[in-house]
Structures are given as structure tokens and as C-alpha cells.
Length: 360
Ligand code: IPM
Ligand code: MN
Image (cartoon, rainbow, N blue to C red):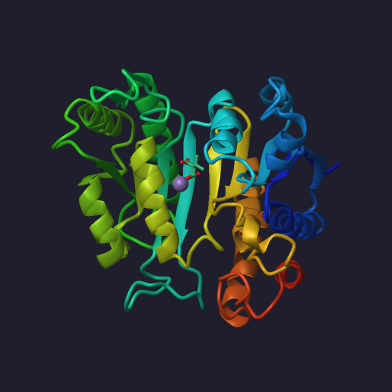
């Protein structure tokens, strides 16, 4: 009997539904080839539902979603809704309530894809960022007092406890041991780099740095440890991305450096991410937004959504199917599409989905 995975599908806003449709097309092609089943349940969370009902996310959503093996998300963000409402009320709320404390974001340049980095190719841009996903400034305490007066005060604190830091680092060490450059036959060592700011944020990153070395020494002596300041990391992500293997960092720094990483791998048309709860249900998404101006035009690039589907299969344990999708995507970037940008691919959204599915 073949395994059946229950997948919650949240197509979301703008071009989300279009790219999700192509992702599902490719996932379906993988199921028939690799002998497992996916059972989809669609949810309409997003801007249209909010404008219709006045409710951003039902309180029961997290509990309902917990019943699934994984969540497949398109995009959240609607031009008719003030920025922040849907992002905080749906995306961030689900990350927090489902305790998806890892955001896994590979930075990988596929063959045939243009990078803005001079003289760099797929052999140079091939690393992974492990972003802490449920703490730091995103959930730290804060508030505003004396609003509207010249003495107004605004506070938003970067708060981390040892538990949050340790579980994120443990995941990163384990990931590095399994998927680092040595493990993949691409280097001499499996290296985990902590990205911080120990020269200024002397409390929070002191906690990160001490925990990093204590845990590494005790439980992961086989993983090589490096430390980089976040500002210098940005510089080297542009100048020498080949130095990096796996990077781990807090929520805010991770948010920022992964946009930089994404543009070096060809942009939002290809960058995929996973919001992972290693002990619970994880949610996979293309990291670009809903690109509302392209809605319904069949010109948006579905590859990021397709790659996030591949990440979902990897996390479910369907490693072969996941790798096959990635290979099919590489074949399409190397031999078919001209550009990753919407409208410039030389093919429509649905045609790109068809090509990946066929190559599987
Ligand atoms: C991301 C996004 C989100 C974040 C926003 C939309 C809340 O930028 O997934 O990186 O800041 O985490
Ligand atoms: Mn971001």
C-alpha cells in the first residue's frame, strides 16, 4: 500500500493560485512516478476572504491545519488591504501558532539562470540559510507611549531565550551534518556559520554564540564552526558566496539576508522556503510575494512554487521525488526558459509547469 499524505493547500492572494496550480501539477506527476499519494484540502485564507468576511484568519485555523502532514502556501498580500494586516494576521500568525521555528531558505543558482554577481556560476552559489522563525524582534515585546507628542517613545525588543536559540542551532547542526558540503560530496567539511552581531548586540548574540559553541563542542564535534558578523556576511554573499555552506541566524537578520541571497540566485521567481516545525506541521512557500499586478495573466514564474513543493516532499521523507523535481527544474532553467522574470520567460506560467511535469 502506498503512503498518502494529507496536504492543506492555501493558494492565497494575487498570483498565488496560479503558481500553486503549477506546483500541484508537478507534485501530481511526482506521485504517479514515485508511488505515493497526496490528498489536497483547499483553504481560502487571504485578502479576498478578508474583504468579504472581515475575518483575517479564523481562530480554528491553526488547529485545523495541525491535522495535515504539510501546508502548501501560494502568497499572502492584497492591494486592497493595508500592508501588515494579512502578513501579520495570516503568515506570521500561522508560523507562530504552528511553532514553525525554522525557516529554511536554500540559496542555489540553477544552471542557465542569470545572477547579478559577476563571474559567479552554480558552483559558487550553493548554500542554505537557516533562519530562526518564531522569535527575536518579530515577537519581542514593545509598544509606543506618548504617541503624537515630541516625546513619543517606540520600543521593539529583540528577545531570545536559551530554549529558542538552542533548538534552532540544534536543527542547523543536524541539517549541516546531513546536507552540508562534505555530506553532498562538494567540500572538505560540513560547515555551519553563525551570523550575528556580537560587537554591538552584546547580549542577544552573546547568548547565540555561547550556545553555538557549547552545543557544537558537545554534540556536533564533526561539524566545523564559523562566526560572521551580519554586515560582513552581506559583503561576502556578493563577493565570495562560495565560502558559505550552511548559515544560521536570528529572525530579522535571516529575513534580510535571504532577500539578498534570493536575488543572487536569480530572484523571487526561483527562491523557495520552508517554515518548519521539525516536531509538527510545516508550511512551504515561494518567498516572493503575491505580485498582484500580474494576476490572471498567465505570465508569472511558477518555479519558486514548484521548488517549494520539492522541499515539502523532502521534509515528508520523499527524498527521491524531491530530487527528481529539482533535476527537472534545472533542466528547464538550463535548456528552456530565457529569463525568470514574469512575462520574459518565453513561456506562459502553465507551459513552464507542463515542461517541469513532463521532464519528471
Ligand atoms: C518573508 C516575508 C515576511 C517576513 C513578511 C511578509 C511578514 O518578508 O517571509 O521573508 O518578514 O518574514
Ligand atoms: Mn522577507
